[in-house]
Image (cartoon, rainbow, N blue to C red; front, side):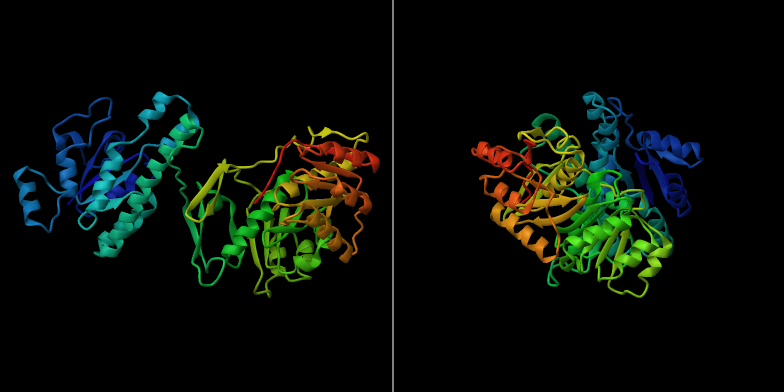
Length: 510
């Protein structure tokens, strides 16, 4: 039996090679892998001894040879293949262990195109694909995570067709994601990120019980290893809908840096938000906005969930809590609550991946765009277009309202008072209806919006929204501006003695 080992990620490869050698495999290797194995007293054969050709063109050609690919590809169950292999002196290779040149690491550390080109693997993907094509005869190992199981199965004689097939699938996933990464990089560098083909590659984190509904299958996939690093289940399993709600909650709660922010989400929409002196006070104030919708919702805590806060949250039914960190005493508060699910990022504050691109499925395809980001200085640099300027307190409320509005389904208006959201209308076909709905819910909850700050994620097309806001007692407004009737809107603000700011940036979320 012969095994060919040629890896860029050399973690665990020495132990793997020793294990193969112990099982009777002859080891063939290349370049740096060969050197490492020899240094560790593994009796490996350099690939040039097999091919009778040296590595050529600065290592660009070393494994592209019939004595290698023929040894991998010929079918052992076909007499014509075995006869031809014998005629040409081709001895079979039964296991191939390959992972590819570190293209990702290269583009992260340098912009030197010459160096980047040289870190595009050619021979590696060819060997992986050859081995995967002939998976019934050749074991293809592309992940260091599989070394232990491969050795164990070989030792116990449990290399069945299902295991071979699983390694084959991993191999094609490995080369497909590698090529996708290269193509996306080239399009990013030369076509602004929008080439003729767009490749979206994710790695499965876990299956959900089902999708949005019980008759649909579902799973969570991650870019890079974001969820592996920043998502840990402490109680319960996350469903498909939980993950979309958690996404909306974290995006809002994490948008305020180290502030003690708490966001309450229901069906991916915010129904409560506050920033106070403590996370406990933030939750109490956030809950006041819409306690009915908060029932069965998701609570995102930009900090540590302690026992006191846990006991307060436990007063109503909450389906999901996602916190930067969770105390053991806090977890015990929910021991007898079977339905609640608790997750943490194991960090000081909630973390965002800040993906550069965003996409959405539509029937027959998907639309793809640069991710929308609310810049830290967007509110700070907003233009005051009214005679009156906002106070420092009003300005802080404007910032909170603006960020929430920017991360909420359009059409949307948000009212914030003293660091807490007191009313919100979202997902409406009319911005006037959104404002009316928000004020109606605030009234039903007994909340006074007078003196609050109002934000809209897009411009007000008419002055009627400003008139309605003034009637409710709003003192400051921020919106992008850009309407053909901006002058009328500004005039209305001045008539009512309100401060009005234009950010000049629209944040539609559809």
